[in-house]
Image 1 (cartoon, rainbow, N blue to C red):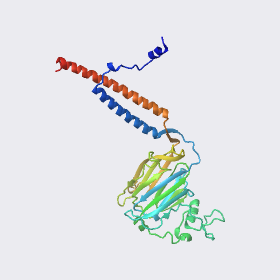
Image 2: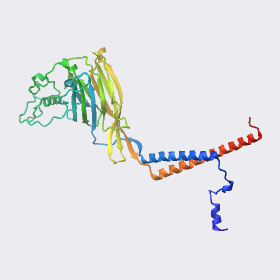
Image 3: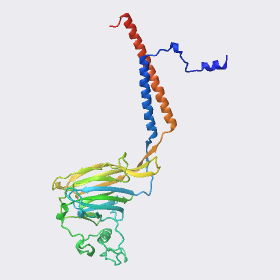
Image 4: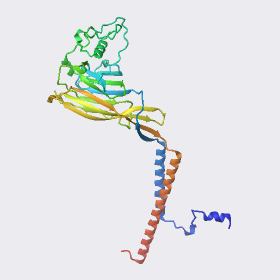
Length: 372
């Protein structure tokens, strides 16, 4: 026996002679349809191969040294900027006086249109260096003999550190700066934009009317009215960079309206999940945070305890979610293409045989006249 004959016996694809093959219209239709399906599936597989896939992992957060960035853009429709205080506190209750931040207030009319003037920088913002050579008095709240309070904000910070109450009319640096009547508080609106950078620990921040002070471990606001309408819109709130596919900004666009002459306390309880996003394009990791929220509002007109304001309380999860973009290998793409071709042709062959057998059986019954 020749070697070529041995190889022929191993042929798993024996060729049928043309004289014994029958070509039918049904078989041609099945072939055309199956070819179109194969082409479409391979095209979709190629598109999927060119796009990176997103892998998700969950593990314990062991990162250190990253600050928690709070990006905020909130509009209060019925309270003027000069009457709004922004305060941030950590889980121990201490007020953040030296947080890194850049927060500005934009005055609005009652229709929400901006008033043409320079935005007001929030009182918790880091003041620029004072070029004045004189040393202003801190009115007994100075830390040492070289501590100077040249601005009203410096005196306020010094009193907050001491947790003393402060009378604005007796502070020389504050005279003429905060002259106001509380009736003017409801004639304008305010949009607060910017960011805070605080330590990565549980805490809270809130917007409330009146100047804030800490006296004997109590956090209070100096405001004369109890009925404060706090209709507001959360234009944006996130804890890090914004990722479109993740829940980094679930509160964006939320508007809350309050009835006339009704004072309420709004609480937002946030559960923050640290998130790491690794893009395939540049390979640079992006540290951000997703969060879920539970909302609660309390009507203070029913003698409920509380203070009118918008309060955000957050706590960090010990787990981190990691999103990583990965490209499929060419071997995986080739394997899928072979599976598509083989699977479609196999199914198409079975359908073609069933179609031909059914047609031949139908023709035989027609010939003998047994088809009723």
